[in-house]
Length: 294
Image (tube, rainbow, N blue to C red; front, side, top):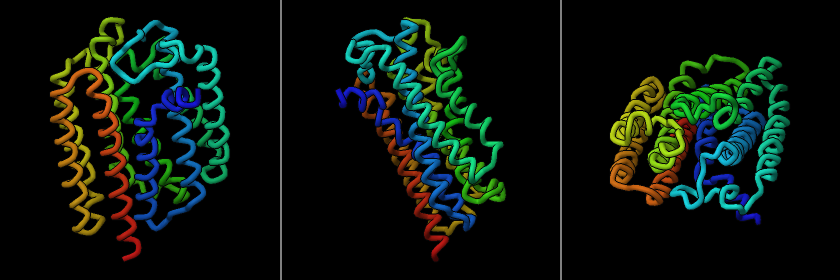
């Protein structure tokens, strides 16, 4: 039973939430303001919020009749009858409650204004798949990912460590880059599920614009992400330029495999896209540490 819950967490996608926090930590280090406790709290909150969103996506897609047995994507435990809908719903709100508890401790570092931000994040975790206008069903999932997996975690992680917005000139371009690369993970997911989604009326960007267009968007996002970080590369040493070059090599290689793959063959490429993002943020973190110490 435990392995079913682990699979429902969609571990291959969790690097997306981790990456945003690591990027925010890198920005704080560049500003000379690293603080361990708020950094760890941000990481825990981000992972719990994404797990809650993944659980909610599984439950609400089942409840709305948008999943079918034997789908090409990762096994859906509720749809396949492995986990009851009630248990998944309880797990969704329980995980969200844990994230809220962690979020409350973050108020000690950032002030009460973070409370409405936390509420907004919790609503997004549910609104992605639930509510009267689920974002993922109307071509808005990609925009939501840029905001809630890029801009919000990167800038707030940096803010909580610095105690202010003095590092925004660095954290904002980094957050946009991370958001674009995180949205690519969703593109691969929707690229794989295009036929299933179209059949049940789920209008993702891939359903709306087609595989060819969104395949090109995937490729373009990687180059735009590296370009918007120009002020960050200039703030680091010239050796940091190896980061965008290495990332783009991996990015283009993954893209070539994606556009020539279909169905379940895209599952490992979804994981590869998430790993590319995580590797990028780890390299950025390493560059920030080098600048700080040397």
